[in-house]
Image (tube, rainbow, N blue to C red; front, top):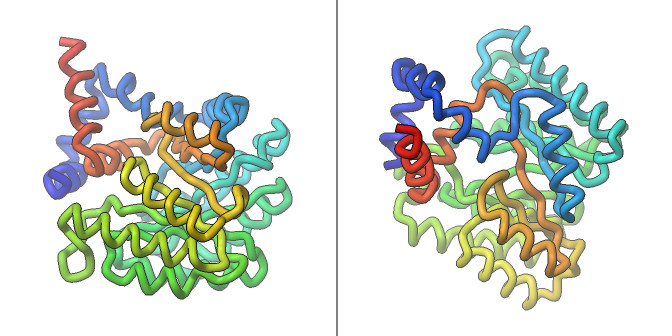
Length: 305
């Protein structure tokens, strides 16, 4: 199913049908609170007031023009200004895809844009996490992460447990001061570089969790899977991790009751909020990740017939 959905995401005809279907915007609102910075700040305030933390992603990737990359960087600067003005920056970081700020066009362009965003985040009183993308960008993204951390040591990165290399990457990046978000992964990767069976991915996730939680860094545990949440809490207890020594992360609109449960336990629970007009690719990846997401979408379509 994942392969079929990701293939559909690259077909312009399918995209046009989904984008213009009357029900689409209503369905998307479960996962994307809106397109404007005001929408992003509103959703952030609601979550922070409910005891949650936030990471914000301005949607857009695989840009093809320098002007687009600069516009995306500028959007992050505006967002960070608004978060600071609203008194929300202490509990709201930003997540940035290097492809959205020029990685495929010119590495130096992406690094310059990333530096500008990191400086703005530091000034606002928060930080940045560099999102992971498909496996062909992993080395480049980790290289940029290391470069940025020279001047901005709180910048975080993301590792994807379904990649065969990730356990070794977790061990390399589990040192003091590092911030690593661990997720399962949402791209359609070849078997040569990624585990394909669910059991293999789950086993890899637990191994990677252990490497991070037994290290000296700050693990960010990104999962909606109850089994992985349980595995994480067991390893946390084994290692006597303090409550401020790690965090859980989940996507906006997915398992909100579980988000609240973890927060009530005194754990840092961060919600990943995407916003912007470029929601289509994000939606398709959410559908590809979990069959339950596909069922939700189809039920919503059927309910409007």
